[in-house]
Image (tube, rainbow over all chains, first blue to last red; front, top):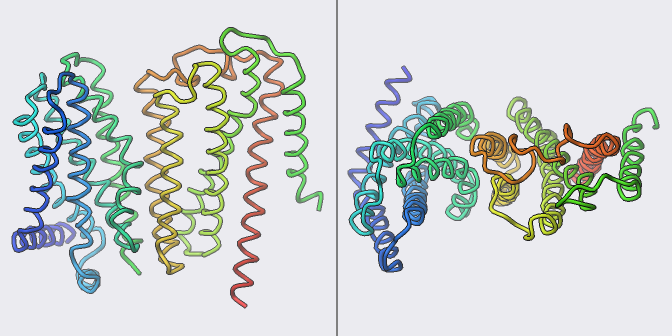
Length: 219
Length: 223
C-alpha cells in the first residue's frame, strides 16, 4: 500500500518537473553561474582545503535552492487533495526519494562543472563519490524536512536558510572531513568511523522525518 | 510553602556558597589556568544549566505532540528561553576564560562551534515561532523543529568532537587536563558539585517563574 502510494507520488513529482522545465533549468543556471562567479573570484586555487570548502559551500547553496521549492511549488489546496488520498508517510518519503534523485543529478553536475572550471584536486575518486552520494542523501533528507517546516510559516525563503544551516552542520562538517582526506590521499583507517557517522545521521533524519511529518501535515 | 519550594532555598544557598567559596578559598595553582581555574564553578555551571533546560524543552515538545496541550508548548518555549540565556552566558564566561588561557576569546574548536551552533538553532527556533500566527500551528511546527534540531545538535556537540578528537577544550576525552571533575583536586570538588546543582536548580527556578508569567498573561488576554 505504502509502496504503491510512494511510486505514484514520485511519478507525479517527475511529471510535474518535466512539465515545468523552467524550474529545474533555473536551478541548473544557478549552479553554473555560482561556479562561474567563484571561477572569476579566485585566480587559481592552490590548496586542496580551499577547493574542498568552496565545493561543499556551493553544493549547500545549490541544495537549499533546489529543495526549498519542494513544498512551495504546489498550492495549499492541492496539498489538501493529497491529504485525502495518500498517507503523510508516503508523501514525505516520496518527496525525499524524488529530491534525492534531483540532488544526485545536481551534485554530480556541480562536481563535473567545478572540476572543469577549477581543475581537479581529487586523488581518491571512489571515496569522494561515496561522500557525494552520502552527502546528497543527508542534505536531501534534512532540507526536505526543513522545507516542510518552513512551508508552514510565512516569509519562508530566509527561514529556510536560517533553519537549515545550523542543523545541517553536523553533516556538512563530517562530509568536509572525509572529502578532505579524499583530496589529500591521506585516507585510511580514520574515515570508516566518519562514514558510519554519516550513515547514522542520514538514517536518523529519515526516521525522524517519517515520524514527525504527519504532525506538520495535519492542520 | 517551604515544603514545596525548598529547592529554591537550596539553590540560593548552594550558589551563595559557590560564589563565596569559589572566590575566597585557596585553590591549587596549575600552569596555564592558574587563578582563572575559579571560572570552572561558573562557566561549567552555565553549560549544565543550558543542557538541562534544553533537555526539558525537548521533553515538553515531545509531550506536546502527544497530547496537543497548549501548556506543554508554553513550557517548551520557556525552557528554551532559559536555556538560551544560560548558553549566551556560558559563551561569555568561556570567552573570558579562553582569552586568559589560550590568548584569544574564540578558537576554531568543535566544542566552541557546537555551543555557537546551539545558540543559532534556538534563535532560529524563536524566529520560526514568530513567523506563524496561528497558536496551534505554531506550537506544532515549533515542536517538530525542536525535536529534529535537538537530536542533530546532540550529534554535533557530543558525538562529533569525540570522533574528530582534535578539540583543545577540556572534556573531549583524550586530553587529561586538571579541569575535568575526575582529575579535579578534592578541595575543588567540594565547591564544584554543589555549584553545578545550584545552577541547575536556578535554571528550573527561572523557568518556573517565566511559565507562571506566561500563564497569567494568557489568562489576562483571554478575558
